[in-house]
Image: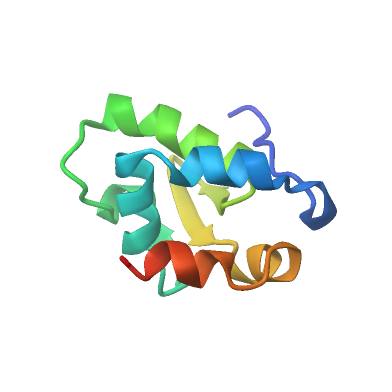
Amino acid sequence: MAALLHPARDEIQLVDVMHALGHPLRHRIVQEIASGEETWCGNIDVGAPKSTLTGHWRVLRESGVIFQRPEGRNLYITLRRDDLEARFPGLLDLVLSDK
């Protein structure tokens, strides 16, 4: 498996995060993992095929919204809540509030 790109905390850009969270399916993914607990990508059920989700994982990962950790043939994901809160205080709570 190729190395996964994860920007450092200080490299996370607001425009990239907003682009990632602006797509309805990616927004639902983030809502599903909002607890912050690591989960296997296969446990996320947002009603989209695996082939579609692969591209969405990449956008979320490369924007700095999620962290993906490979283990064997599986990818585990976590929301980078601490990093996002440090860079953009209150943004994630606002986006997830459904208001």
